[in-house]
Amino acid sequence: MKPPAEVLAKTYLKNLYAAAFSVCRNVQDAEDVVQDTLVAYMTCNRDFQSEEHLRAWLLRMAINKAKNKRRSLFRTVPLEEYVETLSFETEEASEVFGAVMNLPKSYRIVIHLYYYEDYSVKEIAGILKLRPEAVKTRLSRGRAVLRTQLKEVWEDDES
Image (cartoon, rainbow, N blue to C red):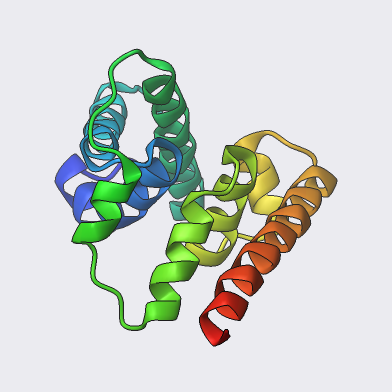
């Protein structure tokens, strides 16, 4: 199974962008990563077993390319400038987004895949090539960091 790249782009564009942005933390690099991921798909000579296999491959490719991009010397727009351009339904949603984006990378990626992409712990372990226990630990630690950060922010608002 290998659908045309145009169909793939329409189906997974937002997911790939969100995964790339969670690593790169800026718009231009995330857009470049999505484009590079789609080019990699078009040039690969493999058939995918299922829709889930294809989706996991694309997300893994996007995350790897985003890590490579982040390691490069060239960076573009800082996270703070990008956040100012976004619109959120509530102030709390904006604060949660900011807190998630400020998590250490290892927590941010698993939080993104679990909550925004609806992957199970087992699926995340396969995508990131980790043991399921490691994914559970990162989710737990990431949640604890978020809980602490958001509690401090919200308690300051009440004062």
